Amino acid sequence: MAESNEAQPRTRLLRRFAYITIVIFIIIYAAVSNVLINKRMLKEVSENVPNDYLRSSSDSLRGLVSADDKTASPDDENELVLADDKTASPDGENELVSAVDKTASPDEENKLVSADDKTASPDGENNNDSSDKKLNILLFYADDWRFDSLGYLNPEVHTPVLDKLTTEGMVFTENAVTTSICWISRACLATGQHYARHQTIDLSSPVPFHKYWDETLFAKLKDNGYVTGMVGKWQPGIVKEHMFSHANSYYGFHYSGEDHITDMNERDALDFLRNKRGNGDEPFALFVNFFAPHHKDGSKEQYFPQKTTEHLYNDKNITFGPTCTEEAWEKMPPFFTDFNDGRVRWRDRFNEPSKAQMMIKNYFRLISGVDMACGKIIEELEKQNLIDDTLIVFTTDNGYYLGEHGLADKWYAHQESIKVPLIIKDPRMNKNLIGTRNDEFTLSIDLAPTMLQAAGIDIPDRMQGTDMSQLYQFKDSGANANEAWRRSFYYEYPGISGHTGHIPVQALVQKDFKYIYWPGEDFEELFHLPTDHYEERDLARNGTMNETIAVILEDLRDTFKKAREAAF
Image (spheres, rainbow, N blue to C red):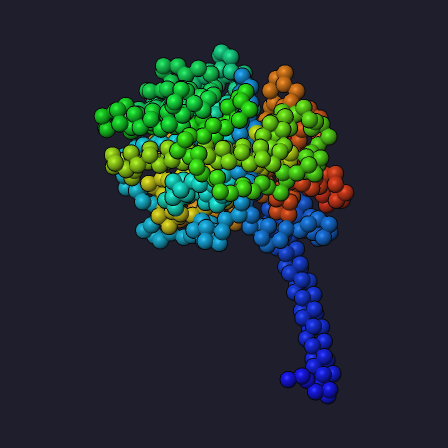
């Protein structure tokens, strides 16, 4: 029934009042939300910046957190930002760019509870603290695989085996390499040292770190009674007979006849476990060095997956990250030209939408193939009742640009390039920490000390990394609640001698700020990571420079110089 003439004005008045009330509520809500976000960011910054500029920074940063600065929303702050990376081998090997930044779903985030949020019961310090038996060691070491190219972080990637491993061990979400290129990173793993110390860039004989071979991870294990095996990609020089108990080195291709290289890696790993690991009285250490998902040099198609994974990803378009744009490329430093090797490889892979989809799908198919191989090898451990006596580590040699910043491959200091996956399953792990994540800075140079400690072997003085087991063996995750395990780290890429398409770069990485220095150009960049996940707004030169940023920059320069000196 229509409203009476008397009721209509009253109805209109009530509606108008309701609209005004809603608008006022929205304005108040937005204002309060903005204040809370600003306070949250300021609290995060003030907890991490050095004390000597803490007060002035907190005051002046209020001016930085403005609409023009695109303050991170709550959703943005939960995102896990990754870094891609590029590698070139001596013969010009290209390396694949991997996954897009993805945020874990609420269910996944509940599974990956921060290690700091878990506490152990007095009798739950670890699972195996009464045994003196040396642990076996199994390292899965993949190539050109950035940290978010796993299903537990990126639902577009099919990796059920590694996803399951995260529920049985611990995930390290801030793990990084100290140099993002294949052979240098592999030398960092072997030596537990920064490139500045091991100096392995020229792979002609003699390989620099081989001079100290007796102090490497592999030599220490073999010399202390371990049966050691290495299958797949080695690269830092030639594998010599004395280096491992058993070794089979090969890489640089996807197919050899009918054999896919990942199938060969799996076959040789299983052969070691079944036939070459000794009589069972000796501990073993097996290093499975996958070539995948590295691209094949000189090929238009770049990535050649196994036939068993060709059906994957056919029914979807893969999502690319927000900085896979021309605008992001134009924000790169002025000395980045179209002849930069990262830009050349971007054109080879990502300059056309259909080509980009083909490339990233085949790249992910190679990843899924490695996941399947890891599953078969773990199954063999279970069949032989070795799973409860074996330290299992999954990681990769460098990150990978999948078009971010207009680049492909690795090398440079963005998150996509330097952050890599790390999953550790250790029988000694505090059982209350199993299935959790740890957000401390862990590094590629920490792997050797961690494995040596698990083997009960003294860590050589020349190693610069730290045993990571203190982060998961004990009740407090190995870190004081008020003090980070490692507050910052030094990153370096020396470039390739005679290759003008590779630009040397160094960086100091903290949870709040990243300082990047290009030594050949005497050029600096400064990014505030909590509010600039994708490293798009250089605070050193984008109009936000003020007295506070100047103080922060000066402090970071000093800290950077000290970190660089300590790397030698």
